Image (tube, rainbow, N blue to C red; front, side, top):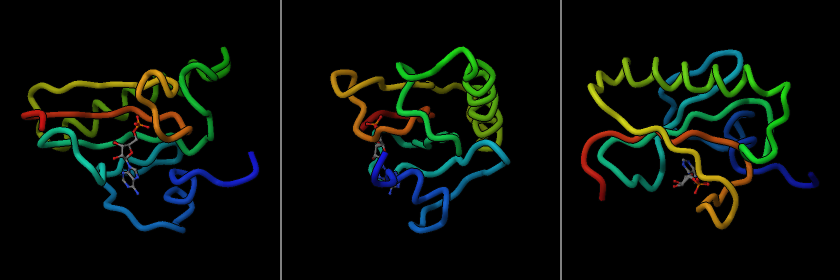
Length: 108
Ligand code: AMP
């Protein structure tokens, strides 16, 4: 990949964002253009383009991503929520760096 994607720039601190949580593997940020009352993105620090590009070695990463989302939902005191992966341009994915949408409350 020649140029860093926007999520790599957020992870490296080149672009500022509203951070909810972070650990060694992930960052959780508020979506800049929310599609629901509560909308966060769980982004791994490892660059993988999308679910479609995950290899067997990424199995643990994907599992951990869901557990990180669960912990974010608990932090936000959400009683119910949606977790959504968009995969590929035709699946609505705009940013080619795997991320999990955490959505709660009413959709806009
Ligand atoms: P997707 O369409 O699945 O690739 O989702 C990308 C999401 O990233 C969209 O919901 C955007 O609103 C969001 N987004 C784009 N740029 C930023 C940014 N700088 N900070 C936070 N969220 C962003």
